[in-house]
Image (tube, one colour):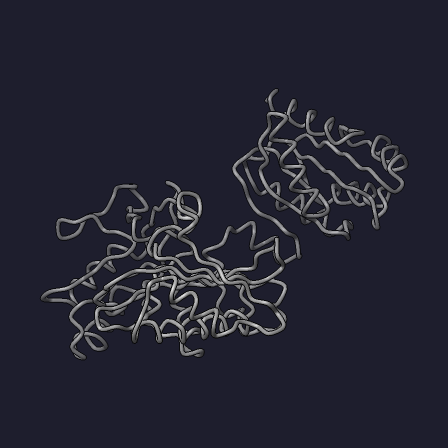
Length: 413
């Protein structure tokens, strides 16, 4: 589960992770009013407008009119995802920028040309930056431990740093028994070249950041950039926070933080029925039980010359209701030209799955070809059930045959 930057910063404040003063706004009028009352009156002469969307690269992205798809300009400059406003008539400028941004779309490297509509903006005080760093915490699945990362290459995509200059990423693994130790924080601080007061501030910062990551049940906590100000402070200038979905039962309050407008409508719908669904750009709808098999199915479709339209794991209980909901969600995607059902019967019996597919199709209209491959417990009985159902299934006996069949069907369209 993802949340916005301003929400992440509010949570980080509980753990004494220093951030800048900011306020979130939803309308241009609110932006202008808050800019004056909460910033200008208090003597703040620089305000940074930061679009709040679930996508990275905002500072390098541009605002486009959602109707005409034309890049928006204001005061002779192109309006971006992050804008620094200063000078005279500060509140009025904030109002004008907010009016140009809210309701229009932000296009970044991550969003693609489709962009994403901006519905909220974070107004934040400006700060004088001496140096930008990177700090992040994530689970390293190879070691089974959380890893704290730091780099001098702040403000740059960490994936790019990892690919081009991996030696610039410092790592400290957290042993779950003693936990993150202060000597590890000091080691990272030395590695970043910090000394004096900034060194002390960073050590406390990273210790508190680890505490926040663990107590909030995060799956990712990234500060990019982490900045050293000209007056020697260490601050989280940005914050990206994802929660571990498996731990949400411990945090019912997180439901208030979810912004479903930032999520795919089909993915939101699928989550209502505990279906693991991710929309992709292809034309072959996939219905599979098990995440590993689902990924392998997508790979084999691609290798066979096709293109998967989704990742869809119906889980171990592939019953009538789950299959019907899966069909309905897949059919809501206009790009789907064929469906591949690939089920391995381990705990669930294939003949029961076949019965479920037939019953589900009595309630959901599917107008595209359906290729079915069932293997495992009672697979032969399942194949007979499908062939005698009166529904025009194409039944495959092997994994590769199923992928080939669905690809051939799509190519014929």
